[in-house]
Image (tube, one colour):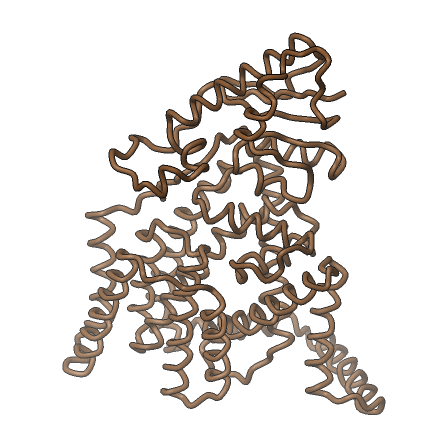
Length: 494
């Protein structure tokens, strides 16, 4: 029954993330009305994210990163924000409390629950709503399409679809165990560590379900940026559509998340230029600080092409609006372009580049959840190092085989770990659909490539590991912890 459990875990991760980066952010950074709602959201998001990164790094370096310290940090932020707005005078607090009680009583007597319904009814019937309904409808359809593209594989797989996720997972486990606090990457692992710690949710599950949600938010940020710069909601929806459906790289990698902070910074600066809002300048500063600590990389070709196309569309829409506003070209041109692109090049689900079998990730998590921390060890490929760091002992499978293959058949020999699991693939996992014909010398001599990416190297290692395990089983008590057509997990416990 994976689906109900996975759906429950996903809801936990997403609701906790919303509570912190929407609820807490709204309480800590209140704003005057009149600013675009998405700009308000992303402004609060970048400010709270920057504070979260700073807090996580400091707490981890002090070796006190846990749910209590993080909860206290957010509680102090909310309390400080409230006191800054209302003061600390007991008389002021009493007056505000009594005024709040009076407002609640008045709300109850006049059936205040009806007021939001009446307000939304008036808004729906207003001329402004009539102008916004088409673009809101298109944005909703695009959001559903982007969500389907990004959320399909996480529900089908516990293993990760891109290599950067294993780096992020390792950094999360290091932060949760108060080690290597200031190593790169910083931004995404700090966010993931916060949710994992506060929700008491395993870091693998948080990385699995929160990463695609961040991808959706960051593609939306790109749409917001172009919408603000060109002052066209339709251009923003067009950019969101292309980024969400046709960029097959994850934005959670530190390089691409830096790109998103760059776009958000430009959006905030554009808003400041148009409306002279000081808060937009503050938001831009936070976005550029996050960009600086994210180790940004050069734009990927497809991302640069999408931004260029969106910019051309933005200029064309602006020019059409200035020259012939009565024809509303700025509205139907992006819509027709989206329909044409969707019809000719339907969005394809991202092509995952898995590094392991699904069963290997599942059994790593099962071992970690079943056995006491640091009372077991595994010998497995490198992906299991990230999945089990800080929870048990890890030995690289290649080093393990070279160290013990000559002694495995000796009845007097015992593995040093009392609870040991060895991951052996019956059919070596194929990293390449077709192995490249030319590989640079530096990659060819890299141990990870030689043992786990090269088909010949992985096959040779797995065959040696299986011979070692079978030789040890002949003279020692053992059992098979898990087995399927692709993978065997040997249990050599004593």
